[in-house]
Length: 311
Image 1 (cartoon, rainbow, N blue to C red):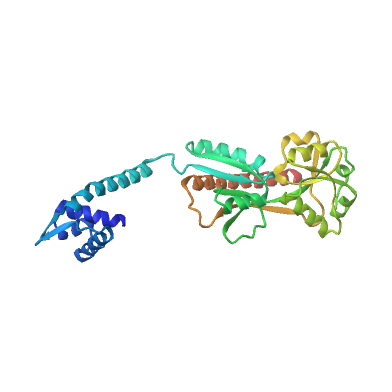
Image 2: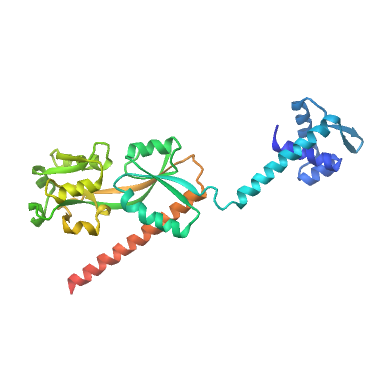
């Protein structure tokens, strides 16, 4: 049974004429008649006495008409409710890796609260592999994670590229070294995130490209813990530029490594077959706008520094 068949049936019952019913439904009369016949065959009852040009309801037809009207009224009410609702499709689940969530999401969520007050954002901070699984299983609408991501069922939109910086304590010898190369790091103890972290894997690959394995003395669950150990002079680390904050200046020194600069790229993921709700669209709109403004501010800052250096 199809909804269109029910609409055709009600139209014939109310007009008592197949031709007028077809005109009301904007279909041809033979097409409408065939659909009524199909409906009668499916339900096992004749619904109309065909008396010349007049169609009169049978007892079965009169019984079905009441139910048919209830079905159509319910569908129409649901359609109007969905159209008028200001809150449906405004609750989304967003995932982010630990090196993105604390630094990118708070200002972004604040912007969404100002621009889209009906939007509710639920956040899950997790490692990349778990976030990818969450997207594939339908648990998450979107996920912010580092690349590479090779999964054919996911849409991958790169949104941010940033350098990876050496971070050391203010009293560490490398803090006073003018040009630090990757190979100089081989003799120092590292404080890194755990083995599930995509950042840790990237750092290990970077060190491997320079023919050494990082000596890991501290494995941490959070960036804040990494910074604490580094600030105490217990080790060094490599962190994305976005993880740097003004509060770090008292204890930490960030340095660009000489030679080829390591960097990472962050992307937003979504399932290619998942319906993208209005809430997800609003979040992405705010994300792109905020990142564009941030990039423009960073460009202005670099230009200002260059001018001051010339002066």
